[in-house]
Every structure is written in structure tokens, then in C-alpha cells.
Image (cartoon, helix red, strand yellow):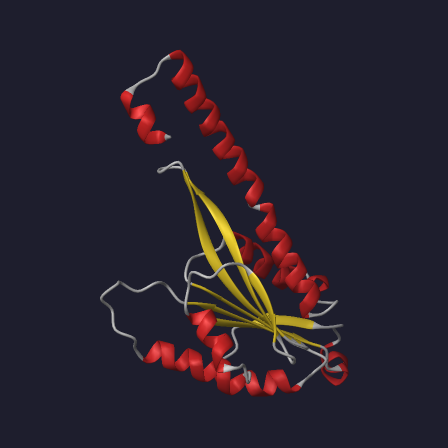
Length: 203
């Protein structure tokens, strides 16, 4: 799934509508070249590509994403290959006209008493932000809704929008750590007060 959000800063457009700026979603991929041509605007493209089964064959989706990222945005094929291949350590690569960033968002799985990490690939340019992920990321969804609800989240440009996204991702770490801390405390109590064979499995 590919969704596109755009902030329009065209003064002529503003006078015609009587608004300062407009932030909308629902654009088509074919509209991207026109949206990106306005260097004073901001375009955020979010690519959600659910993980395929191990025996699944690469299909048209991978080709379309490669064409979009390399063709429309002009990203280097190596950075695109990195983004479409999961399991990278967090990093920042400067490619001159854009920056490629890898982050890991976290989510606490209460059923398994475990923390899941989800890779978030980000491309940051002069007037655009591109995000790619294979799992739902709560922090990204919050930031997307915030941008649509209040244009001030995009007023300072894509770099500040990225800062807020990173801040939201980091904020989700604390609840996970608190939950894990409670689990560790519970296991310690079991070890010293009422040890059981299954306690070893939890450790």
C-alpha cells in the first residue's frame, strides 16, 4: 500500500481558497512528479509492504517500488535495495541530494511477553519524506494523523517532520522497557520465592 500526503504552499492557491496552506492525502502515484516539482511544498510518501511468506516469489510490487524510488525520486539503486531488504542495523547514509535512514520501532507483545522490533526505512530530501515498512508502526500512524490534523507539524519542512517521527518512535521505547522491567521483577520473585521448572523457560 502506498499513500501520499502533501502540503501545498502555493500563494496563488492560498488566495483562491482563502486558506494559508492545505495538507491533504489521497493523491495518486502518477501525481508525484507534479507534487515534487514544487520545491516549497512537502510531500510524504508512506510505503507499507507486508512481509511475504518465505516461499513467495518476487512479483510486480517489488518492481513498482523500485521504479518509484529510483525513477520518480532518483534514489541510488543501492539505497533502494537496502530499503527493500529488511534486517539492517540502524544507520544514516548521506547520498548528497537525500539522506537514507534506518530506524527500529518497537512494540510489546503481551501474549508472548516479548518486544518486537520493526524496521523503518526513511528517505529525507529537500521537499519530501519517504517511509517504508513491512509492519504497522504505531508511532508513524500517530505522526501521519498529527500532520493531517494540524499543518504546523509540516510548517518547518520535512526535516522537522522527520524529527517528530523519530521522537514518536523513541517515545514508544519507554512503555516497552517498563513492561519488560515488570516481567523481570516477576521472574526474580519466582526464582527466590517459589522456583518452578517453567521459570527457566521464561528466563
